[in-house]
Length: 276
Image (cartoon, helix red, strand yellow):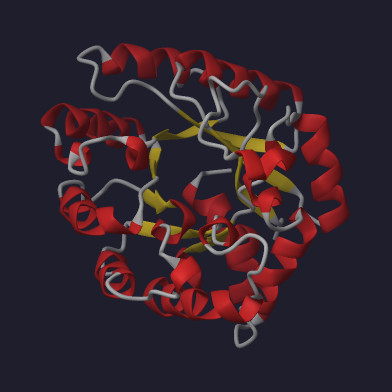
């Protein structure tokens, strides 16, 4: 079974486009492109990656799909389209002609309206993804979980993949209400979850594997090994952890699993969910 990094980004850095990156994370305030990532995955024993949108633009989606055409190690793209646009089908028809477009994402965590995902026009867009067999990556903060449960229930046959375990408040050691809500969300069998983005929700200068372990334990218990995916969140992760060390951290957090269960998390589930 191949090892697949289910979540990373590329970007040409500008302050305007990536103003969310704080000054103290200066290590990631630069360009990150395929050659940079290829060196990382080769050293870490990763076979392929899934590129995920970072900007909400069709131009960036085309840019990512162009990289995927040029580099075999980029197995799939999670792009962006304007899901609330009445012409959503037209946008999807244009994008889905590319063989490596496998999913769509919207940056819900940045919307001023916490209930944005419940908008009727947004849900019409999700229904269009379902008809075309495209997955949807859910990017939220832990406070959005109650709305997310309602949202997911509207689309029982849609494949959903939750990014960054819904960004719990790891820095202050808070488990609930995140744990309660994540367990409820996980009762929906069409939702899977990425083991990614955790270090940057902790203290990037002082985090420890022991601090993260309770959060690993909750999602492993809630989703089980058949619905968890390894993801690096590179280059964002570099604010607090190197690529290879994050992969090792994930592997060491799953000591009780069988060989097949670990292989599923490290690649098999991404192959299945994103149809690689």
